[in-house]
Image 1: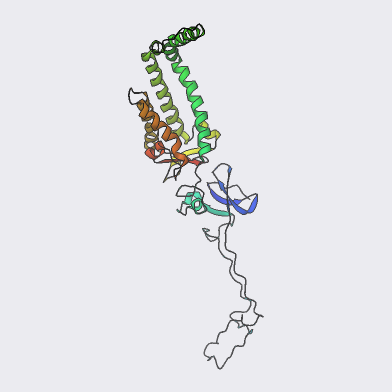
Image 2 (image 1 turned 90 degrees about the vertical axis):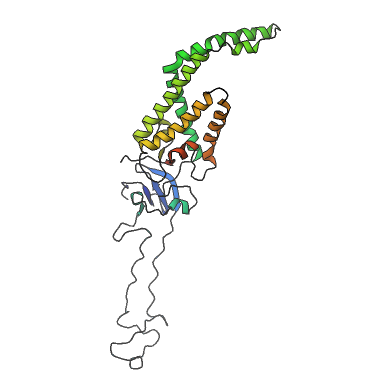
Length: 299
């Protein structure tokens, strides 16, 4: 069997009774039972009652009676044409099954209960999204330390020294002054570090998603971001809305008095795909995007 050249559902090369999703590069683990109608068997002309009854041109039924089991010239050994597979164009090889670029809106994956886009591309599982998030978070944290580590150290150095002194006071039985410890944090330097961290997040997400629809974490987990109604790398507007919504929650979390609301928003954003029908986070809904299995092609 030749390797397909475009994403879609095809005959599983390892199991003829299954369909398997090809993401445009490699075969994925997503499989569905194959349900094609078999061709109706040809009626046996020698079986009583199965012979076709017809009249010769110009003759009445009484003039040319037909008896059970007597075939006519029009039906003698007439083969039944093979049934065409659902979604298959005449002349197409039978192993090809509803190619993704046609996107006929059949919702193949949804018919079988597997969450999918309107054109049938499987949605990423919540576990895949969590795995990609952890990988990307680690990489962004390292980049944040590279560019803003100095400000983080400046903000927390006096605080760390105070924490060590407080631990010594507890050992000697002295009551520590917790309020004075909090005041040792350099709020200005911490704010600069937060701004650098948000900038790193925005550029990291923007550059990778606009280039291929995949951050490094998503590439490792074999998932990608696309628009809900259109396959391929998401547009600049969709990426901007998606990333901008996440940045807005970060900013809200950093503001005095509003930080708790920002924290609640962040938690809901991270958990939302676990129960959403389209497995969208809140920032996905803002951008009109979904996270799917496989890679995306550039237009």
